[in-house]
Image 1: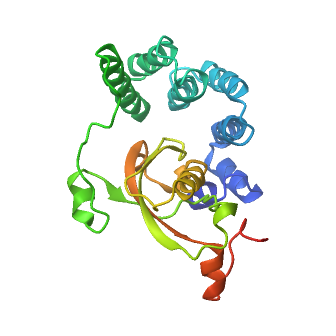
Image 2: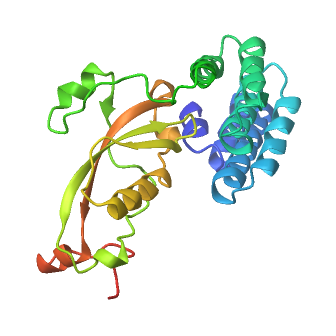
Image 3: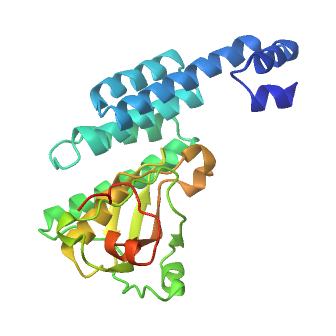
Length: 262
């Protein structure tokens, strides 16, 4: 029964198992709450409606005071304020206050730990702006794309292709060029599995291709449910391989979406 309830929570067999275990009421409530979280994420990431997603997270927190759900929802509010509502406004401290609230109200949760990281980053950026300095990455290490030890020394692991990978849209002006190569990226994966930062550590040699690679990666994402919590909200190295439509046709390789046409 425990295995059925855990593996197939939304099925009639899972619900029946939960009933046999005497946990149906709380089990159903958990399912409904998870569906509400999914709805908030759909509003945010698929429908690009952060205002509505914000209201959903606030409602979840109000309905589940003092629980892990409340902490998760409070972090969701902070995340939206940080990355969607006021991402570039240095005078708006609402995200900072929201993160601090998560730390103060839910201090023993993983969401408090992540909020502390975001507060630390905000503090460093604020200090640099006050000094009139350009905000840059803390690490000034030179990356050698052929030397994986360089990444390890910087505390960066190499990650596989995103679960929800957005294919490269090859620049039309370069469709007849025979090109292939690899670009090394530094990416940040947030607690929801979204890629929120992309930095090219090496270049393709062409600005249009570099921009296309950036757009491909920033719109891709990872399945956070398949990752451990400590694998989220951190930087990784990703090696992005690219090939032009002409090069692909020349060698008889299958075309990718977005490569058709002249």
